[in-house]
Image (cartoon, rainbow over all chains, first blue to last red; front, top):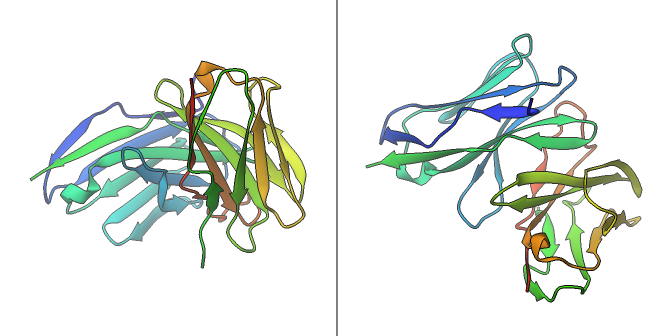
Length: 109
Length: 115
């Protein structure tokens, strides 16, 4: 079983719609959970992090964490073409980040 | 506030050579970690340093090594380069590393091509 699994993509959404990304993790000791956005040829850019159960909102982004279900998600509201990228879910344990394979999102105009 | 700085950004090496990559973390950050990203394997953890001590190491051969200096700057070295070492090498910094609430930021990366 992989440490971090993300819903397979690619995910195509129309401009203005909500993009929903899901991630599950295997280590119950994981403390912090991150969503990074990565454009082709660029390094990962931190867009959200969460460490308490519940929702955390930042602008058009909402992260949700459910430690009992070992599940973390990211919602992107009012999707824009500039949101087209690969989204990486990552969790911390043993002083390292473990990453999912990423979900590629395409926002079509 | 300056971000994570990695040098060099791009380099081409020949098989059998060695390479040293450098990372300067965000000011005040004491944890530095390194990752390798390839199309086939995704992002894989190499090692993490905090206050000059390696706290964790990923599943990479001994050709991959690193260190951290007293000013928190870090270097990683790959000896006897192989074609498969061609990748984007990413450095990440945070205040403490794993503690809940610590944000972790990446540098722009060093693109290594081995020919």
